[in-house]
Length: 238
Image 1 (cartoon, rainbow, N blue to C red):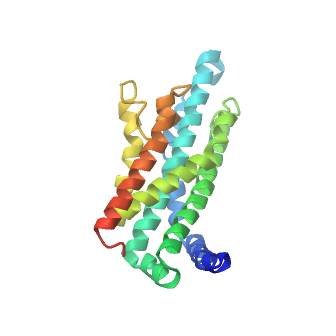
Image 2: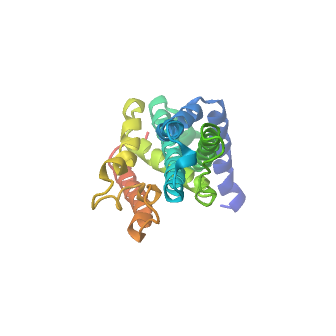
Image 3: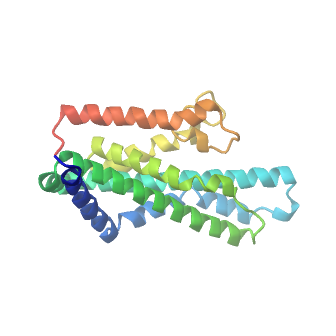
């Protein structure tokens, strides 16, 4: 089989999934979920006298906001990936893609489009969040732009996380909880021995992150991928 022939089904599957995403409301839901972690900090900023903050506290506030923005990007992308994938199973969309393009191209297209959309969604959520911070702080609080540049990559990771959860939990009513609950564990493990091994440990408010915290996210993603493959082999994919 030539390269062109091998790429044909994948190209068709990617184009079909891209068109469905553009016409879907799921990205809007992802954006809404992506902004949720930022709202509490925006409310907190409105209640603080920013001009009276010592330099150390101001820097800590900026880092906390940057961390919340990154976490929001991941959450929004994960919500999108989970909803899209679970819905594809429930509505038979994935089955039709497999029949028209083949199993591997259909799955690859879904993950590729989810990753791209996740990067865009995370970036959009952060841009809106940064604008909101600028408005409520009258320009006195500026998120760490160096951290913000990581947004597309974290969005890709979040979308893949959500898509993997969607292949395991194929019910849209439950997939959001299954995808987002593990990402919120860091909220309850802060200050404990487990804070560096949660999925979003590297994006927590503590800086700089430890080596364990940096490796935790990829390790959790790999473990989830292995679970998705194992469960997919034990039951029909379609």
